[in-house]
Image (cartoon, one colour):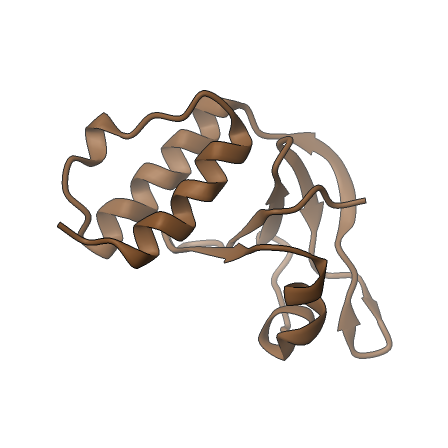
Length: 113
């Protein structure tokens, strides 16, 4: 079961897609109906990684991969995302937990220097 919030990492792109909760996942057809590649994945707020290629009907069902991302790995993803959006002081970004690193994605999307 996904621990929300979460981010979707699209292969070959630094952009992260923030997903606040299950309701947003269910209500946003670009999320649950997309054709994700095998290299795309979702990371939840505890670092668990989910594959996004399993579909039930026409809806993507995040499937646990057994992999996890560490806080250091998540901060690297968030920093790359922030740099791509033009945020300043990217090197100074820090969060004490994976959940807070994921929450920074939403903040970066709303705030620019």
